[in-house]
Image 1 (cartoon, helix red, strand yellow):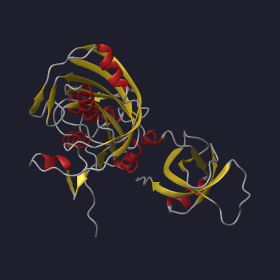
Image 2 (cartoon, rainbow, N blue to C red):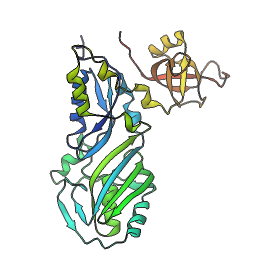
Image 3 (tube, rainbow, N blue to C red):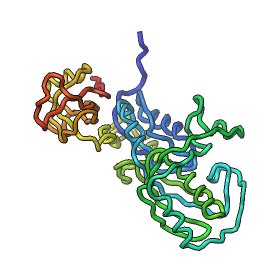
Image 4 (spheres, rainbow, N blue to C red):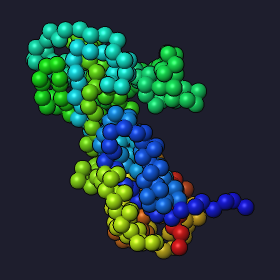
Length: 324
């Protein structure tokens, strides 16, 4: 007999304003404890020396965390030119110091050169896994692991301030982009070296900055709760379907919901008939104000190839399990 998971069956997303210091997993476990949640997961770690938006998924929302992991992110970063460290940030040992003999125009041009698609070699101090262990585990032992270049894209890059040797930038980028590596490459391209002195994540996908909440605020609220009353904390949760808000949606009726809940393909009314292989949000009701049931994948109906364009067949991929 399977052991029942302890904790509340609470579903939603907390937009934590991560403070400096501490790992993302440590903060996740702290928030999970504050909410007394049965299940929790994050959507991509932030370095201990980084701060800012860290979406934390509680309960069934963990099933959709991959969509946020794959989403674009926006960072504000301060780089100091003239110094290179082992980790490309302030946590590493200084390995090289050079004079900063460059103009502001040269710095600006070098920064803007990172716009667009490129290949990036992940830092040895990243959380990427090699044989089950993160790369930083090997780096701390002085072991160098060969890494394959990865496709990344910088969608936007704004140079906010140049006061040499400091450069401040705002960077909107694709998943898998390491800002420390961009800064290290910037220093190498300028011939003087550079490292990150400040890194703050301001955006993940479409989540609003003003919905972030600090750990101190969560602790303050939790300490003021009456026994068994979590309403003040739960009111801070963002609905879990916001993790997939960019997907087209399908609405289904009562009968189709029973089929979806049992893992069977369903036919529903869709916002965009995009065809086979497309992922859709699935709701029970007339629109997205109904009950969010999960994500399905569009399929061709083997019995009827002539269904109207406003209808679509989907197979369940990730289903929400609601408990009474």
